[in-house]
Image (cartoon, rainbow, N blue to C red; front, side, top):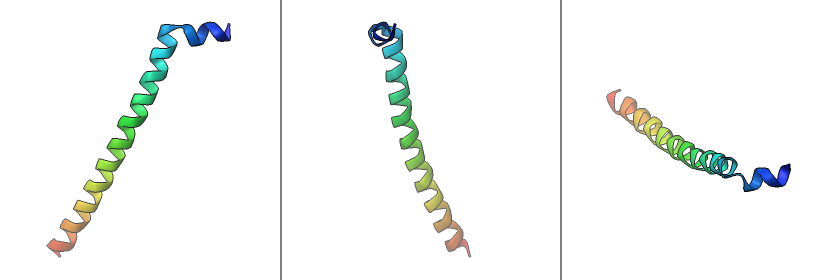
Length: 47
């Protein structure tokens, strides 16, 4: 049963989807961190 799962295209597709989502999520976290830094800089400049 377990071996069939690994050969199942939809199972492999799901794994790929999870991996690509993980990469996308990391990118979003990086962008979010940059935006936070920019926001903090802006607030400091406004003061």
